[in-house]
Structures are given as C-alpha cells and as structure tokens.
Amino acid sequence: MEAGGHACTGAVAGALSSSAIGAATGAELGAAGTAVGALLGAGAALLPDLDADGATAYRSGGPLTAFVGEAFQRLARTAYGATRLPHDPAGDGEHRGLVHTPVFAVGLGLLVGLGALLTPWVTTLVLVLVLAPGISALSRSGPRWVRRRLKTHRDAGAMLTAVLITAALFVSGAMDELGWYAGASVAIGMIVHSIGDSATRSGIPWSWPLRRRCPKCRPSAQCRGSRWRRSHVLPESLRWRVGSRSGKRIERTIEVACLVALVLLILPDVVGLFVPATT
Image (tube, rainbow, N blue to C red):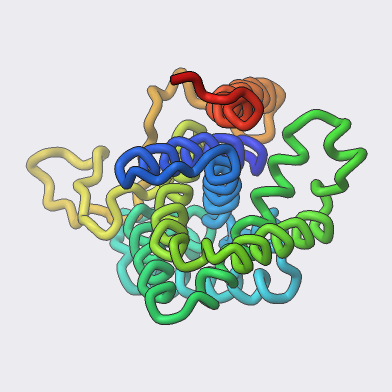
C-alpha cells in the first residue's frame, strides 16, 4: 500500500483509539484530542517505511529521519542475516522485513512509552517526527484546496505544522498526558501499516521470529522451515499489486472512505463546540 492509504487507515485507527481511551478514562478529549489522535495514527502508520529510502517518513524530517531510517535498515539486515533459514526468501531482508513485523511495532511503542516516563522531551521529539509525515500524506490525499492554501503536503510545510502542534501541546501542559499514548499510537499505527501491506500481493512476515514449516515440503520430509515467509490478510484473488492502475483505484477508494469516516468521527465534537448541550 502507498503512503496515502497507510496514512488514512492509520488516521482512522488513531481517532478510534483516542476516543476509546477517552471513554475508558473519562477524559473529554473533544475535537482537538480526536484530531491529534488521528494525526498521530496517520504518522505512525508511515513509520515502517523508514526501511525504504525516499519514503514519506524517511524524508519528512530531513537528515534526522534519514538517520533513523538508515539505523532501522541496518537493524533489519542484521536481524535477517542472524535469523534466516534455508527456505527463507533471497535478499537482505531490509524492506518489509523486521521493521514491518508486529514484534518490532510493539517493541518500539514500549520504548517510546518508557522514554516518555523519563522525560517529556522524548514525547516532544516523537510527536514532531510522527506528525510531520502524517500531515504531509493526509494533505496529499485530501481535497486539492487544502494543498493549495495550506501547503502542508510539502515536507517543509508539514514539518512546520507538526512543530506548531507539538509546541501548542507542550505549552498547554498536555505533553505529560500524551507520553504513554504516543507509545501506544506508534505500535497501533505500525500494525495498521502491516495490515495494509498484507492486503497487497507483497505481504509481510507476520510470524517472525517463529519458525514455520515450508508449505512446499512434503509432510514426511525434514523441513527446517522459514521465519521470514510473508503472509496476507486477504485471499489471493482479492490482493492487488502496489502501483498498478487497479491498485491505485482500490487505494483511492480506501482513502476517501477513511477521510469520510474521520469527518464523521470528529463532526459531533465540532458541533458540540457551537451547540450548547441540553439538560
């Protein structure tokens, strides 16, 4: 799945998770809280593609996100080389490898959450780096007038907007409350990304690091199995090829549906700002 589809599905997941957390904790997040949750989810859903040079998340923060991307790529290659089995696919395991696995998503989310307990600056840095690609991708998927007026589809405009949102949260004192939620958003968004890639013909290694039996080997044969075999969430007949004409149509439909869902999720809170509650 391309960046727009990832960002839009991540945004819906982020908005839903923020609403669920607000309901569970009794906090009234309002439209602003739901919107921030959506932007966090959108950006987090782009993070797995840090393992690909030139991806939205890779270039969104300039040298800083490129540095993180190169670190993730090296980690992915190292993990693949250390754990691959004879029946694993050829290659270096860099793209759609370790960084696309649920294990990595949960681990990174825990690190972000634990770092936020030590200092709010961890949350601040994570927010800027996560919000920027999400804002950029959502702007490109949204109406053209948004791109023409706000210019947030450009990396510089998206980064500036991310910094302003983060600064507003910091000044308002909301940063302390966002620490653990930012970690949860990172994990949820990255898993949503993996689900999106699993709907295409590419797939991702869902079960790593577990050893799986090779489906081509006979039951009686001694099979050393594989750890990096990719899995899918859709039957083969429903998967699409990323970048193809039909794939672009499918992903555009997903983007529009997600943007409509976002409006429906945020609209009640926006209306509540202007319509006084009746008792």
